[in-house]
Picture 1 (tube, rainbow, N blue to C red):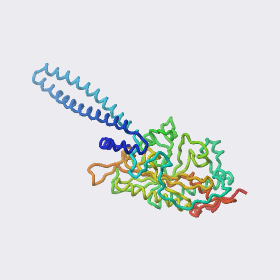
Picture 2: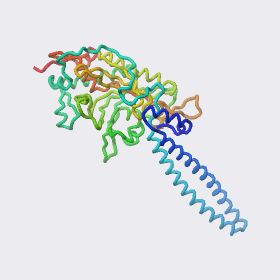
Picture 3: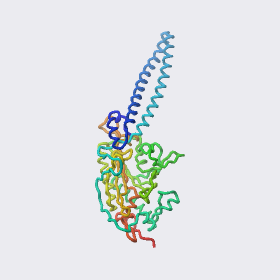
Picture 4: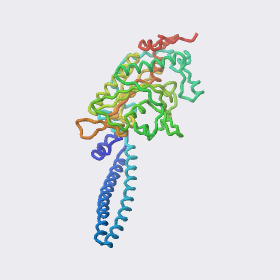
Length: 427
């Protein structure tokens, strides 16, 4: 959430920057500033009335002691009138503050100066590419066909159990999933991240704090009776570890990692572009989360991008890193890099990771601050996170790129985790 101070001091800049995100903020900014003026006027008026009430209350006793009963009665009547006015103004003050908070939650985060303008994925900027694109070869099977042929992936069974978008991994397919999770976690731990195993459900406060609520896109699964939400990413519980906290700046960075299943409704997803593992409603992911000082959060972002890049390199997958344009960025992000890997049979790029700096946007919602000797008061922290990595499309690319007529070859780095170097056709 943007701070009110940012909007008060730089309203035109807020409007201009949010246009890069294809968001027209002019009306909201004017409403916010108008409510803020009313709030401050109400507070100033209440302070004056309270001061006058205190003076009158004190004078009543003095009048009584002096035998001035008529003046004392008039003072009592005036205090009654003032109390009613203060009560009404305090009620309105509370209403204005709630309206103000609600409007502030509707404004997206400001994009970083390096975010390119644009409306969608076609306007994203490729930062760099790596690996070797596989040659287009006749007869390559897409991963959903490979999964069925090799007996490692069953979409129909998942549809029977739950519905479309809930695949079932079998045998070596399940072991490949487990191997990837362990590999990603081990690499994160080597890089200094502390592993957590958080809950898979969060309450409304947690979902609000990281920006999932209000859920404008209908992506979250809700447990209505308990008012819990299934997590769309481990970012939500892990970042919320630090809600309502003040951290010592000297102890930064905070670096955490977690493996969790993730749940996303993916409302409106259908068609050939979301077949198989390209888009599912439940999937496994290893997440990395950092709490940083504002002075070095963009240096930390580059470190996180490098970490994810090394993972993709070790899996020997062709990849590219793109800087998202304003129109393709999330509500909460200030700058996002997406990683995409190339799937040989589909001949398309598949997104496998987003690495983002949220600056102070989440921290303001979280009330996560830093105690820094250079500042008189605690300052807002910066939060960052990234997928390191999400499994479904990684698995899709591994299967398609490493297929042979009678086997699927396992990347060398995963063999110690799988215990096998290939998946062969069932006998």
